Length: 274
Image 1 (cartoon, helix red, strand yellow):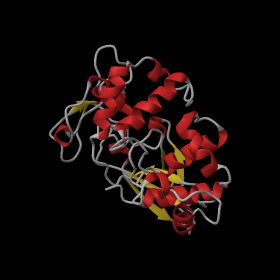
Image 2: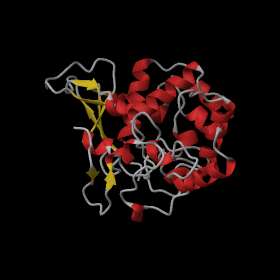
Image 3: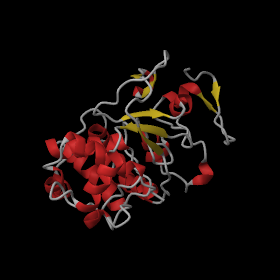
Image 4: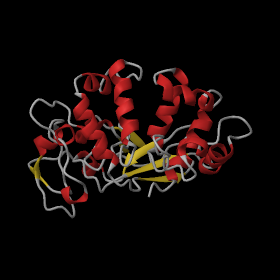
């Protein structure tokens, strides 16, 4: 069901017009008491075509097609924007153009805003050989339950769907996602993450901290969306992400198979970020 007219979400006193929600310039801030005042680059303002909160949400946690920025080190976020601006990290469709037109001051303010947010559990990881049948909806570009019902083989995939498609489409930061992964993924991923899998990779805690919630300027891995983690690992393998920080990851990803990446992503996504 597409949102129409005046829209509300459970637990919020706010209301927004559906047309405003559908745009990218002025994202809905359903729960303003849950964060510090947002800078113009995040909440939207005159001359800003894409406010950060439209994709990453005002909570910073985003959807599968975007990144979870909540609680990430400000220095890390600033560095990634610099990589996008220089073309060192590639996303010609969205982040590259945004970075090129965003001032250093707006980047700094946005980074500090997201760094101050508290990350929360946002995705539930479920292992199954036969997840519900899904399709990719045109609206929102999200995978959703198929209207005809049924199941399908999981194969070698991560299938991530909104827990509530309507609330996801209206950018409700209290309605997260479900990620279906192959049986055994988390156990296999735990071995790879903690031990490196007999030289297949490098134990993640060496750089990302014992809890995998980040260390200094190194980003958090715990509780990120599995689809996002897998995408970043593939990008690092195939060169879409470069720069000094990415260079440190080259050894870690060089020997990973598709099944390894699925397993690592499933395990990391299942961890609490709190």
